[in-house]
Length: 252
Image (cartoon, rainbow, N blue to C red; front, side):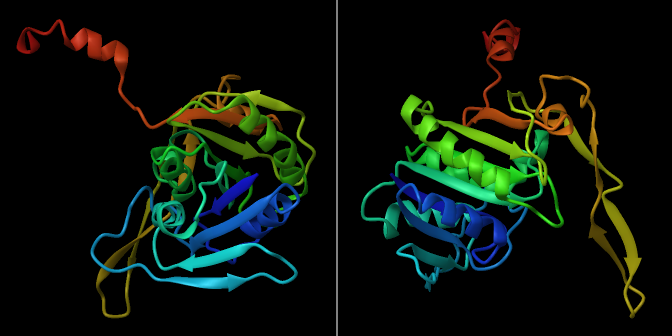
């Protein structure tokens, strides 16, 4: 198989290199990723300046790597349209440090990199590990080496990304197919004063999971020690409400 690998933690992140090494056992790997951390950049693309890609050599590896001074979506777009001579079988974004659960997918550069794959007609998945510190990628890569082949075999529908979250440091209890939970962030801004007396704000915040006890959510699956897999899609149309709106007098 041929793989295009990207992320939002940057090309030198531990997670992307653990993924690269695992995929090298399965086929041909091309890595196109940001030259620095680009977390929470969403699906931004660069249109006001040129993009530069620096070739990266990996020790004892045939993998081609490119460090790009752009966003995760830039990297996948560039990889598919300008770097790879033959389209990959699948785009894999990750392994991201920190989970991408619930509404996180709206902000995530990791998920957006995967979305860019499906926008260009290539199956894709985004993979995250449920920790910010001391990651252990052992169980994640073991699972992915088996699961990726199955995903390619059974064919992910066009326009669908598999959003995968994996527990850290423990053997997962199993796999749950989950829906996105409802997650928001509270106490987001820390108000501070700089040495010149001017006010500034530092964005931080803690996640609040409003339905974490619902066993159908990705948040609950991770909480209970399971791998969560959620199919998400580029079409965000709310079809039931679309039908209701057709009944409004204004729309007749």
